[in-house]
Amino acid sequence: MSGNLRFLNKSITQSLCVLSRGYARRTSFPDYYQNPIFRKDEQSRLIEEGELSRRAKLPVKPPTVYESSSVYHDPLVNKVINHVMEKGKKQLARSLVEKAFENIKRKQIERYHLASSPDEKAKIELNPKDILHKAVENSKPLLQLTPIKRGGITYQVPGPITERRSLFLAIKWLLEATYEKEKQVHFPEQFAWEVLEAANNTGKVIKRKQDLHRQCEANRAYAHYRWQ
Image (cartoon, rainbow, N blue to C red; front, side, top):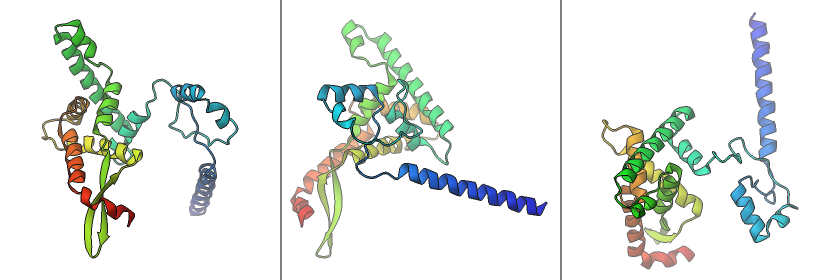
């Protein structure tokens, strides 16, 4: 019996090694391989710019598991779910984000019915995904502080920030502001409130971004250390 178990464990280990090597071969591509463009809006933009004919001649990487052309797939929502996820419990993270979207929808519908004029109703956004996009866009910082050591002194040097880093900080700040809550308030309610405030250019996250920009403005005298 023990021999059969050893043989079974050995076969499972060999299968996992083969799978991992195959996955590494599929994900290891040269730099000139292009990322797949599977979103219809991006494809239409490339057609308008005339880039599609040029990209058609270049080799393309295969899409990952989570990449889909479905209208229900939103890369930003998927990224937020991955940030919320802890210990691999993605189903729980997805349910929390969906409950937050439901709370956002309820609050916006309540505002919509309380609005007195048609112009005010037209200004109220009811789609939670669009509100999340607007909140993240408002929360993105434009500058960052980088510690650079010169002559034994560390200076906080302001400089431009990449789009990827800016998106990461915006989502991180939204979640940190959500976690700074009382224990009586659940995650979906607080996250919905923080997203609505950020979408309206108010709240903790917007203040944190503005404070960072003020620090960058105050340290502008050290900006030349970026090139030394």
